[in-house]
Length: 90
Image 1: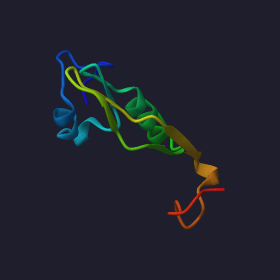
Image 2: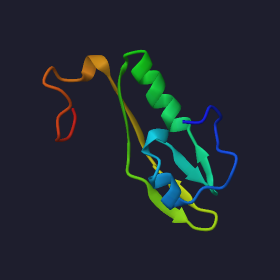
Image 3: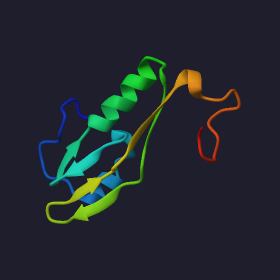
């Protein structure tokens, strides 16, 4: 993941998809936005629980915009002993 909040050149949705090592990020008018990734890293580094995002959606092309519209945080204390369930959470 680059150290800045956005990349320095325009990226396509296809290129974004080819870089899972960038972590959870969005593409806004061809620029990679790592805000979600920073949230995920903070939660993981501080052992606070789990953060999730929705699937990415291509909203526009040329320059491309891919958004993951939702972020969810689940506090460590709320994670069931058996792990995160596959069904709805209470």
